Amino acid sequence: MGLTPDALYDIELEVGGAPVRFQVRTRSEVFPIGKTTYLPGGTTDQTIYVREGGRAQAWHLVAPPTGQRVVSDVFNFFDANVVVEADYVILRGLELKNAGIHGVLIRKGVQNVVVEDCRITGWGRVGSARIWGVPTGTDSAIYAENDAGHLIIQRNLIEYPRSGSNDWESGGHPAGPQGISLTDSRGGNIIRYNTIRSTEDHGFNDGIGGASNCSFK
Picture (cartoon, rainbow, N blue to C red):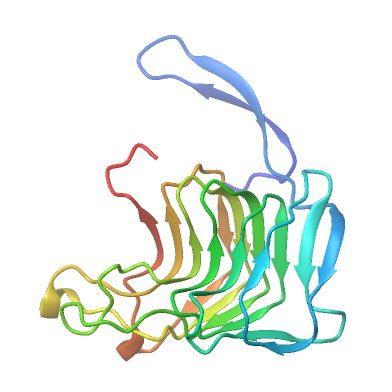
């Protein structure tokens, strides 16, 4: 809608009755950093757990040291490259490879997480559903569990999952990997400026998908 970040707007809603008027402020694009955790440069084969959060005026930034790369390649031995278990966390500039299920897993109920400028590739299970996709259909580069929300997912390169989806003609409803998945989210999410790509034999169920269908959330 072309709204300005961190600006106050007047809203009026009317559905067959007296109009309701209120004010809302759009979200700021500035996230003040309170603590920075620089991960060791180079490659790790272990899952990275982020258990310490921040607050609205002091986010916890997890990033590579200046001028260095951090690569998490778990070689399919662990379910996730990164597990976020705390609020007000920023993941920035990580290269995440070969997760057994999800590249980044955001735990149930976690709020206010930014995932930006990351490359995520080679995630997910190889199964035998219908043709050769995975029956859950939601092994994801970035996966948010139930009631997580207020997520900002931006400027990431998400490419080439390990498995692939069947198509409608060869097996009914597709089942396979997704780039980004939100499950019954609390809302308030921003997903923008990401590149989500693959090859025809490693296609997605959805590039960006949500659940559950028919849920009030």
